[in-house]
Amino acid sequence: MKEAGTDAARRTAGQVAGDVSRDWLALIATGLGLSISGVEFLGGILLAIGGGALVAHVRRKQHPEHERFAWWFTLVAAAFFGTLAGQASPHLLPGWPPQVAMALAGMASRALVLIVIDATDAGVTEAPNIMRRIIDAIFNRRGPGGGV
Image 1 (cartoon, one colour):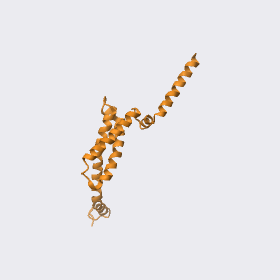
Image 2 (cartoon, one colour):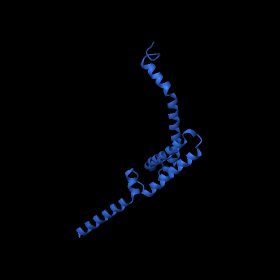
Image 3 (tube, one colour):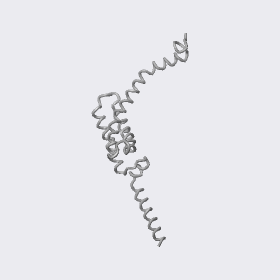
Image 4 (cartoon, one colour):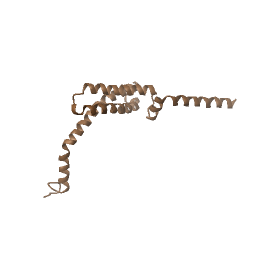
């Protein structure tokens, strides 16, 4: 009698493990540390990428010289930040579906991409001045400590 119950439990556990291994979306979501189903994860990622693409389309005239780079960077950032928001959604928006947090993070990713582009543009234009100041400070020409 006891052996029959153990065999049934073992068979059920094996069937459950087999069912989970067939759902590759659930495996990806579990591997990323998400506690949502694979279909919810896929829907959230698609909403995040769609939200990022929508905001990128609306705000496309901001950096015309970097538009192609900004477009692809927005899509990748939307997927990344959407995944992070999916992990944090029970704490960020308790009681709301995780797809809402993922979509909002995807939309916000365009703003983050534009901030990164602005920072790198400023860094490229200011790099010679910054290096000149560093060299002057190292060789004590009008740097700290008096200099020549």
